[in-house]
Figure 1 (cartoon, rainbow, N blue to C red):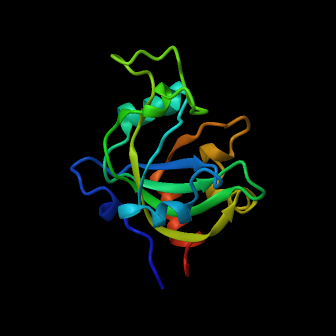
Figure 2 (tube, rainbow, N blue to C red):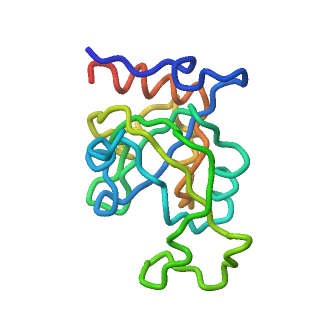
Length: 171
C-alpha cells in the first residue's frame, strides 16, 4: 500500500502546510504526462484568472500539497497527488502569439500572468466530483461549491487529510 504524503512531508518549511486543488485538462497535461516529464515536474501555464494567479503569487510555496485534478473531460476528478516545486515566474505563453494563452496586453517588463512548477508525486484512482459530493466531510470544499470554476483553489487541511487518508486509502 502506498500512503499519501503527510502534511509535514509535503511542506517542510516553518509555516503550516497549505494545500491546493489544481485543475488541468488531461488533453493538455494529465497526471500521466506530469509523471513522465523530466523530474516529474511541469510548468503550470495558462492561468488567466486574477484570483488563481494571486493564489500562485501570494500564497503558494514550494512544498505545498496539490490535488491534481482533471477537468473538461468526460469524468472530471482528482487523478493524482503533486507538490508545488518552484516559486512563480512569468508565463511565457502570454507573449507567444501562436499560444491559445497569448495575452497581447501583458507588458513584457511587468508580466500580468505567472506560472509555477508542479511536481507529480503519484497517480491515484480517479476520485470523481460525484464521489467527493457523497462525503459530508467535504461539503464545504471549494471545488464543490456552485459556480466554482477557478483552476486553482485552496484545500483545507481537514479536506486534504480526508481525501488522502480515507478516499485514497489502498491506492
